[in-house]
Length: 204
Image (cartoon, rainbow, N blue to C red; front, side, top):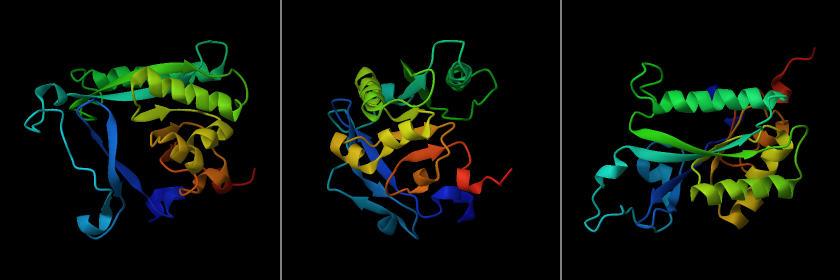
């Protein structure tokens, strides 16, 4: 549908489960279809909860979602301001009594860890992937990252081949990547861009 923007070619989600060790386990994939049987493709993993009787533990009612943030701690650069916005919104989402975004993730809290990015331009692929691995390690798994910002960096950490080799399915939300090539959902899965694709921008 047109509302999917550059994802009109198809949307495919990984279905994840937290096991008894607190690790994320992939149960299969889901994509839009007429019914659940057509939408969900399981991989044989059973849905489990970390309790002896497989019940939902009380401490997981308000579950914590682990989020990585690619940031710049120097106020001299524009990315610093963007990161301040990110951390402000996370604080507002976590405050369930301030009347602002209280209906967003009402049963969850966001816990984030931050890595510092370069101040200008894009990083080398291995450097940005190393930072991604650092976030993954610091948080013992990451549901999503906010950033990277640069299209080359985004391509490096969402490339399907690298993700498969590293067994990473983290959702990447990029505030400013605009490269048309990143619209290829097969080559760059689990990517959500918050800026318009360059090919959709009118000529000046």
